[in-house]
Structures are given as structure tokens and as C-alpha cells.
Image (cartoon, rainbow, N blue to C red; front, side, top):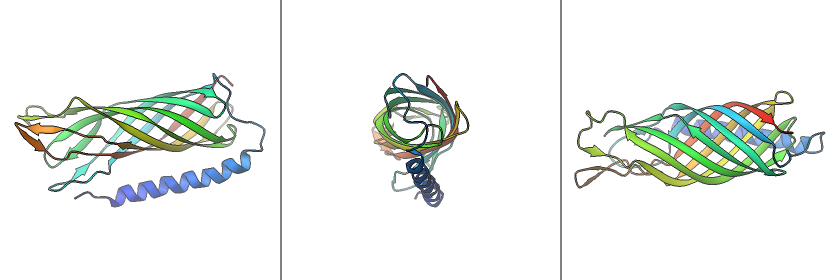
Length: 207
């Protein structure tokens, strides 16, 4: 079975952080700076923990950390699109170990002033590349080359100056399937559906 307690603690901590930032953002909404204009954008570097939330019988599954770079462009004030490109993360199961690289594209709505704290929410799609860590060790097991799914997102940027901010981010990947087989048999786990719990720095440009 899954060891869900660290995941629950992480998600609660992220939700508390987002809730606190929402209060700050509401206070800041009447401040000096409003939403970024169309054409402005952000570059981000994040460290992310992939924490599987799916469930299956007969074993355990756990994730690992990875690095990520993303670019965000404002399409209109308070509306933006973000694409995030990930390095491989390790996913360990009782049957096999995987490399998983989740790439996400989200449309986001932000709230609050850019010069204080700004909260955002988003939805979009993801493609996660999947491969076995050691093909020789898991001889006979095959996994799909990748999996398409949907993603939901929330997070915040806390300003550290005119261009820099600290970022906290939480995403949920829906319908992430390993589709692993051994001969004609299906090999569990099937659905991972992980949380991506991230933090890093943002650089704002174009304001």
C-alpha cells in the first residue's frame, strides 16, 4: 500500500502556504502594481518532488525529486500560459523502477500585485515520458513510451524585488498511466496520478 502520510503533510503545508498568500494578495490588490501586461513573462527554476497519489494492490510505489525549468507568457492582464520542462524523476515500485519526466502546459489566472505576493491557479495538459531504469534487470517488462493526461495547478510568487520572486507550486497530474506489460500480462501499478510539489525562483521580464 502507499505510504501517504508524507504526501498528506506536504499537500497540507502547500495549501496553508497558498491560503496565507491569498490573504496577502487580497490586501495587496489595492497596492501600487497591478497584473502584468500582455507580453510580460517569467522564467522559473524549480526543484520538484513527484509524489504518487494513485493506489493499487500488491505493493508500494514512491517518487523522487527532479529539476525543472519553465517559461510563462502573459496573454492578457492576469492571464498567462506556462510550459514546464522536467528532468527525469525516479519512480520506485515493488515490480520495477521507472524514469518519469512530466512536461506540463497550463493556462493560468493570477490574483494580486506583482510587487508583493501573487497567487495563481491553472489547468492544462501534460505529457510524461516513461522508461525503465534498468532494461536488463527488468527483462521482459515493457512500459509505454509516455502518457498524456490533464493537470491542475496552484501556487504563488512572493516578490523579492523588481524582477525576482520566490515561487511555490503544487500540481496534480490526472490519468498518468504506466501501461506496463510482461508478455500478455498487465503489470501493476497502472495509475500513478502524482502530486508535483515544487519550489524555486522566478525572474520577471517585460513589465
